[in-house]
Image (cartoon, rainbow, N blue to C red; front, side, top):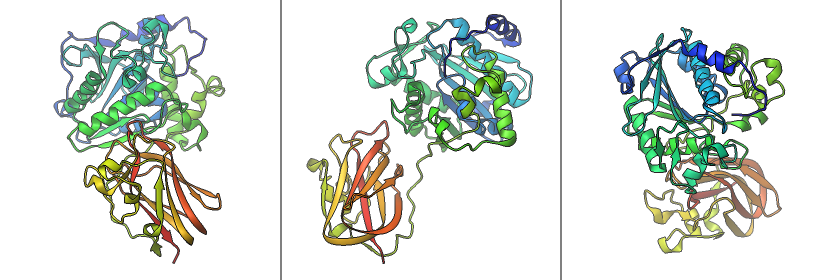
Length: 449
C-alpha cells in the first residue's frame, strides 16, 4: 500500500452504495472448505497477503488466471490496510477488493457475509454469490507502516513488532480480536487445514526487513511460509515479490496487462490513497507494478545431476571460516569432506556457523594456483537456515555473484570463465528471515578439465 494526501469526498457515499449488493447472513456460520463447496474439480488456491491491493498488484496476472480457471480461490487479508486512518477508509478498501474479484470472475458484485468459524476470533468471510468458490477473509490487524513502526491511531502496533517479539500481542482495528505470534500461526494453519488448498501463495518470504519492501509484506510471508511447512496436504507454495519489482524488466503485457490494470482501477475507486487512471498512476509506483510480476521461487527437492567435468579440488585446500560450531562437529572443513549431508540428517557432516548470518564466510586456500571454472554449493538441508545471496572472491580480487541456494539442499552450480587462483572465499550476503546459523552442507570447487 502506498499513501498520498488526496481524498475522494465521495468515498463514503460510494461505499454505502456498494454495500447494498452484499447479502448478510446470520453471524456464526462457519467457513467452508474447498471440498465442502463441492465445485472445485480444478483444485483450490489460498492466497495470504497483507493489504487489500497486494494480490491485485503483486500476484497478478497469476491471480487473474487462477480466478478464471474455475479453481476455488480464497484470499486472506491480514491487515485492515488502514494506514492509521478511520474505519471509513479501510472498509472502503474491503469493498474495493470485492469489486475487483467480481470483475475478474465476470459475475455480479454480490457477496454473502458470514463468520470464518475460528473459535475466539471473529473473522469476516465474504463469498461471491455468482461464483461461490471465490471467497475473501479479513483479519483486520493494524497496518504496520512500511518500516514496521506502526501508527499512533493503533498504538504503534505492527506485525513486525509482534513477529520479532517487540510486542507480544496485536489487536484487530475493529476491536474484535487479538493474537499472539503463536496464535496467528495456529489460525493460519487452521485456514489451510479447513480449506484444503493444493496451492498456497503469499508475498516475499525471502527478503528482509528494511530492504525497501513493506514490513507487513515480509511478516505475512514469513508466517505463511512457516505455517505451510506444518500443513500436511501436498501443495505448491510460492512467494511474490513486492515493491522491488519496479526495478526489474517488464514481463506483463497484452491482454494480461490491460485486465490487471483495469481490475486495479475497479478496486481503486474505493481507495482514496491510490491512483485510478493510467495518467494518475504514471507518476506513482503502481504504474510500474502493473507491467511486472515476479516470484521469489520455491525450494525444490534435491536432485541427482551430472557434476561439472574436471576435478573437484576443494578437498585439497586449507579451509577457514568466520565461525564454526566445533561443539557439534560442524567445523569449516566439513564443507569439503565430500559428503553432502546435514541436519536433519547427519549434522556432523556440514559446516554451520555460530549464529552467523549475512557477512559469514568460508575460505579455501591452496598451496599453489588452481584453475577453476565452476563452483557447486549445497545449502544446509534444514528449511530454517538458507543462503539467499552470496559472492565468490578469488585471489586476484575478482568476484562472481551467487544466487539463492536451494533450501532443501540440492546443489546450485555457479559457472564462470576459467581463472587461476590460490584462494576462493564464499561470502554470504543474504539469508532468509528464519536463519539462525548459516552454513553449507558442501562446497565443490571444480578445476577445469
